Amino acid sequence: MERKGKIVSFIKILSIMAVFSIIFIIVGGGRRCLTLYNSDLAFHLNRIIGTENVLTHPINYTVFHQLGLGVNYFYPWLTILPIIWLMKLTHSIAVGYMLFLILFNTITGVIAYYSMKPIYKNNLKSLTFSVLYLFLFYRGLDLYRRADIGEFIAMTFIVVVFSALYQLIMGKKKAWIPLSLGMALIIYSHLLSAIITVIMCCLMLVLTWNYEKNWKFTVVELSKSIGATCLLSLGFLFPYLQQMKFGINPPATGNLPKLALSVTNLVNNSLNNSWGDSLYTVPSLGIICLIFLVIGIVKAKNTKFEKTIYLLGIISVILSAKLFPWNLFQKHFALLQFPWRFLETASIFLLMYGVSATISSKSFFKSIGLIICSIMFFYFSANSIENTVKPSDQASSQNITSILSYDTADYIPQRAVNNHSINEHQFFNEKNEKVKLAHTETSTKSIINLHSYKGSVINTPILYYKGEKAMINGKELPVKESSRGTIEILNVPQNGKIEITSQYTKFARTGQIISIISLLGLMVLMTRSYFRTKNY
Image 1 (cartoon, rainbow, N blue to C red):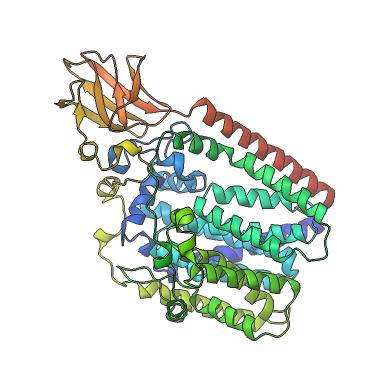
Image 2 (cartoon, rainbow, N blue to C red):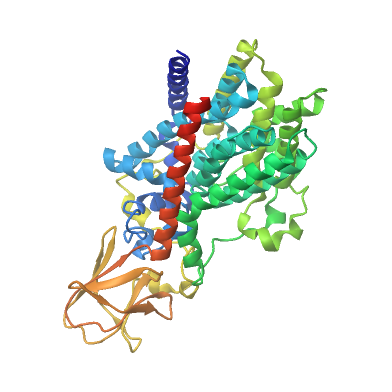
């Protein structure tokens, strides 16, 4: 009967979250999240479409200006796979993307509820948190203004990590399992979020060092979690590290002291509760989290959990602002790009604190009021962006050709940086003379048609990464990296079709196999734990 009750409860939570996920899309303006305000959406759509055959072929030759950009080696792709599957299923970019958001928000709400329930030990608090989390200001900013789908997805698992780590510190057995899974899923979603999460986890350990607990237990369980996270993440980390050895151009860096928010701007932006407009992004906490921040200042008594979480929220706010001496860390953290990324964790911590501090088991109407206000503020934030958008400014199956022509210098070989001949799809022979060659691209191949070719070498405009090969009539041709960072094919015949394709190296496949085995092992442990203790 107890298990049946849990199933019924799960179905109820799932249904509630599905309803609020649909509301999320409606109040957010539907397809507004597909508006091409800047290059970020075009970048991520190319990434998504580029995962069509990523399980067997890491490089897709139809995206990113058809240059064979190996973005899948460097930008996590596992958690965006369902998007391309839904796009293929619905034969529509917009429908597939929107359907993913509804499904993922539903899952996010369920995960948030069950992550916080062991800490709150209160159904109403957990439910309130999960709904407020769906409409969190920073999640909306990520999706509707910045189009950062990776960070948007990662935020779901950050809640799991912070909740599991706190439970581990408090002595809960087996908390290292969800901690490992959550951290690995963040790594498979967004690397910068993983770095920020690790920083905040370390700070949580520091802030709780004097709590009454068994440090030996904490160290052992934390070691298990770190080991499991590493094993689970090797499927991405092995190919990432292998390719980085060959000199890859990193993403653009940011001037951290300049881009950090002033306290005045942070407060004013939060009060305005605006994501920005068609030209500028306006990062902030949003009104709800700002109110929770103020409550923490004036509230006299806080529980041990509330003190810890609130302090972590304040530290995150400081790290996002000019209050922190970012000039001292510019050299080592420039790839962070924007210090206000720490508003991601600040929002989560302050929401955890706010719900704990203001909601009790008898606060039903207060909870309803908070949820209604949160949805209203979310609606106003969505409308702070331009209400009317031309159809041509929204990504769709009709303008996909222009989107796939998007070009970037991120993750290309260092030799290829600022080489315009590559962007112009120019071929050269062994004498460095331009040659005209007919070529076509599919998701897994770049095909070069030869008709009485007079040379023996082709310097192609296809970017070079380890694991790529050239085939003609079932025979493999030798290839190397050219002086401009592209694939150079040797021993080229006069006629035929050369097919350039990509595959994972043995080293990369080893990492993926280890990760799969590790996941299966964790699943066995979770299953055994469920039947023994009914904790999962």
